[in-house]
Each structure stands twice: as C-alpha cells, then as structure tokens.
Image 1 (cartoon, rainbow, N blue to C red):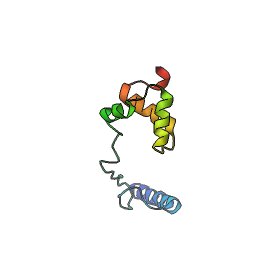
Image 2: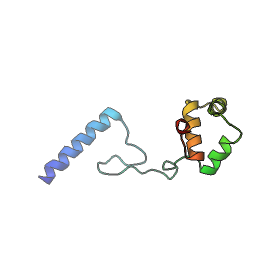
Image 3: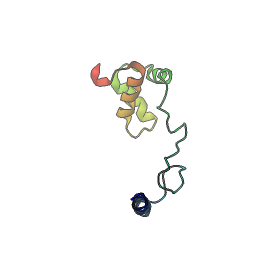
Image 4: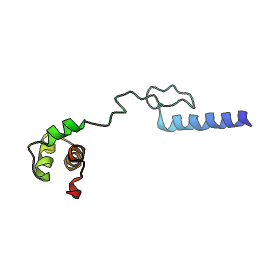
Length: 95
C-alpha cells in the first residue's frame, strides 16, 4: 500500500512539474521537500517607524496617494492605505 502511494505521489509531482515548470524556491526537485524561503521572503514590510516617517507631512488621504504616485507604485491608493494602517493602526475607511 505504501509503495503504491509513493508511486502515485511521484506521478502527481511529475505531472505538476511538466505543467508548471521548475520547483519553487531553492527546493530540490523531489516530492515532499518543503520550500526553503530566505529571511527576506518572510519580511512583513516596513517598520512602524518607517511608515510614520512616510506618512509625515500628509494630512489628507489624497496627499498620501499623490506621494505614492510620485514613487511610481502600481497601486498608489492601496500602498497609501497600507502605510497609513501601518503607521496609525487604522485603515483610511475607519477614520
């Protein structure tokens, strides 16, 4: 039974590799090996101090969005909302 399960797992893994290509991260191409992420991949974004300094000098949410647009963000309103939440603990819709 265990042998059949191992064969089935290997087959499914092989099909996934054929469809989606290389394994994720630095993990070797063997089934059952977890993805090895670096410490940078686990990072949760800027610190509260950095967010406060970014928000500093902006009073309205539109000012924060304009500041994010100047930085070239893909989603300036989302970035501004996230930075405000990180700095104050409130989302813009809550204030």
